[in-house]
Length: 102
Image (cartoon, rainbow, N blue to C red; front, side, top):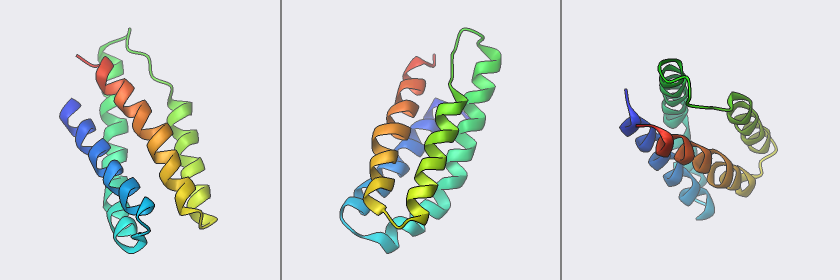
C-alpha cells in the first residue's frame, strides 16, 4: 500500500472518465464497480499516511463530498457530470495528495 496504489487508482478513474466521455457506459460502469474498492483503499492509504506524517494535510470532507456529488450525478443519470466530477475534482485532488507524499 503506497503512493503507487494511489496512482493506479487515479489511472483507473481516468479510464472511467475517458469511457464516459466516449459514451461507452457499459464498460465504464463495469470498471467503476471494481474501481470503487480501489478508491476506498486509496482513502485508507492517505489516512494512514497522514497519521504518520502530521504535517500532511488532507481534506476528508472534500473527498467525501466529491464522492457524494458523483453518486448523486450517477443516480440522476448524468454521466457527463460524473465524468467531470471525477476528472476535475477527485482525480485532481488525489494527484495533489500523491504529489505531496514522500
